[in-house]
Length: 117
Image (cartoon, rainbow, N blue to C red; front, side, top):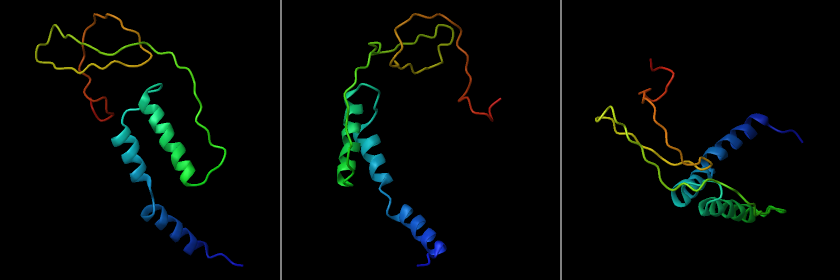
C-alpha cells in the first residue's frame, strides 16, 4: 500500500485547523474556570476538566492525584507611592511570597519591551 504523503499532510493540517477543539478548551479553562494558581479550587477544577476530556477520548490509566502544597497566606496587596501623586500602580499578591514592608524608589520602565529605550 502506497501512502500519498502530500494528501495525508494536507488532510492532517486541515483537520487540525477545522476540527480542532483548542478554542473550546481555552474557553473552559480560561473563561469559565479562570485563574488556576497552584493549590486552589480552580486548579482542581481544571484538573478534573482535563481528566474528563481524557474519559471522553477513552484514554486509560489516567489519575488525578492529591498533593499537599504549602504557600504563604496572602490575600491582598497594597502599594503607596509617596513621591509621585500622578502615578497609579497596581499591586497584586503572589503565592509563595510572604508579606513584607519595602521602602524603595519607584522607576517607570514602561512595559519592558525590547523596542523601548
